[in-house]
Length: 103
Image (cartoon, rainbow, N blue to C red):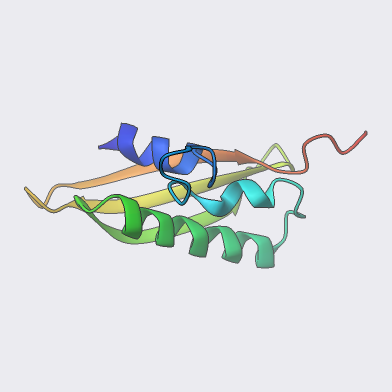
């Protein structure tokens, strides 16, 4: 299940020719500032993508926070429940922003 979630979060929309809407829109946020507004947008995009593309889980919570030691890294924590057996799981996905800032 974690691998399926990882694939959804790691795939940019438009990346797959036969499924152009598959994936998550967070890749459009790569150059966005590390701010609460960006974190809220990423939270919304992740929740929508997982709800649309992974019907085997219920998304319980998505929490986006800055990594403590890296200003250009956001940590996306997804808490979910597997529908078939009601088991709970979580996954932390690192998302790197402001790549190529020229520093």
